Image 1: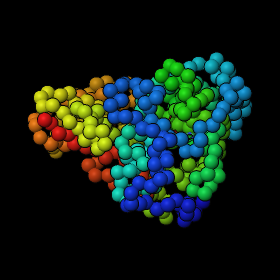
Image 2: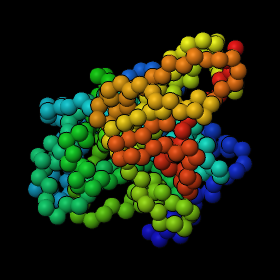
Image 3: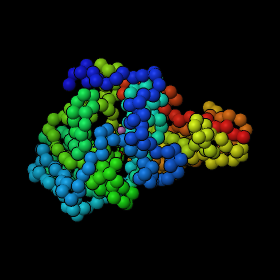
Image 4: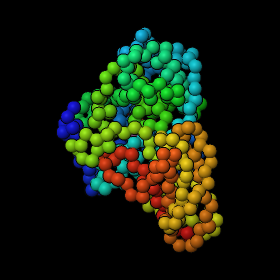
Length: 361
Ligand SMILES: Nc1nc2c(c(=O)[nH]1)N[C@H]1C(S)=C(S)[C@@H](COP(=O)(O)O)O[C@H]1N2
Ligand SMILES: [Mo]
């Protein structure tokens, strides 16, 4: 697909007020309330949700997973068969690649996330590598294509939701085909009866309502791979694909909110500031907390897992007045959250530092 054709049906970014279409998406797809950062593992109802089309209605009794393409043996597996395979449980922080989009100026028109398109769950299921091993990946395999049961139209293109992974990522031992979330049945909105979870990658890679796994000998060029989820400077820029989660931290806003503005009110005196930090590039190594622009190192707790967030805390003595609190994480690659976000056409990979205004009384 030529890039000039790619964004032909996508409305250009806007400086105007929020549109009805954005409201419609925001009401369907919910984020994680920031106070839920207190939970190490996010309760399923508080985990963010992002669904491009409709939640498909799947009868798990008759559902089958197909594993096919460049393999020695194609497989067709029922849920009962998958449950007999060895299972692993992986704690994973998932974040939508468009998280923070509505903070950009001009604003790319899509799901208008603020900051909270994130959550951490314990995903239980069969390692993808185990099933690929059973099928026998042929030596000319390049990618693995994952297709969900959901379909619709995006950018004028009718499609089923599908994404691919390079073969070396697909063979990682921690990539899981999950049928349980936090020890309970996978809820409909999170991909029942089976979804892929790719630790460290932005959420778009973790295909829900999975029906087909195809080992491919050429690069996949589906819409969600080649058109959506790219870092582009403009509609005409081919851009680069979005993959791993950029380092980020968030804070539980202290005190209590104003109902409408969410401005915070806090009594003066000692308060424990806290939040969580994560990165898909590797371990978070530091979190600094900014108090009116002065940065102080926070205390870090061990992460919940290799690609799950870690808690940070910082005791603060709040003086009366207006204050701006922020937090900034860095990871093992040396990457740190930017103070001002670099703009991109689709509003992808935002990890600008969060700023929380509080009035101490
Ligand atoms: N089949 C299918 N899988 C999907 C999607 C989708 O629309 N359809 N959305 C993706 C996106 S963009 C994200 S961010 C995550 C969200 O997962 P969650 O809703 O379980 O948090 O699912 C991904 N997997
Ligand atoms: Mo997403």
